Image 1 (cartoon, one colour):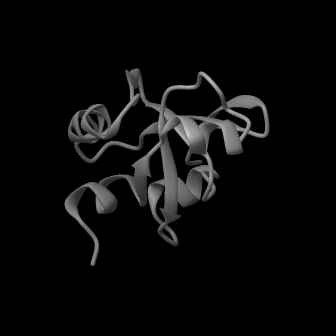
Image 2: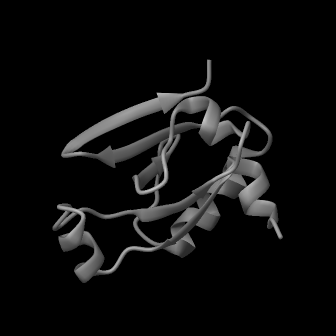
Length: 96
């Protein structure tokens, strides 16, 4: 079942702990792990992938689940920009 936050961004996230960050080659990165991308949602249309580390939505950093929730609240129906860490690179993604 999708939450309000899932529908707003088109993705579900989970906490990123130190062990998971190390496994993903992201030691020292701050963000939440993208656990699911909802088909045809804003994140999918932007190119966000499962396994990305979401570092910010628009100009709002998402270093943990609480900050993620606050950032999503600020989206308020707009098309968000996602800053993700993937394969050693930081990408800024927005739906076209």
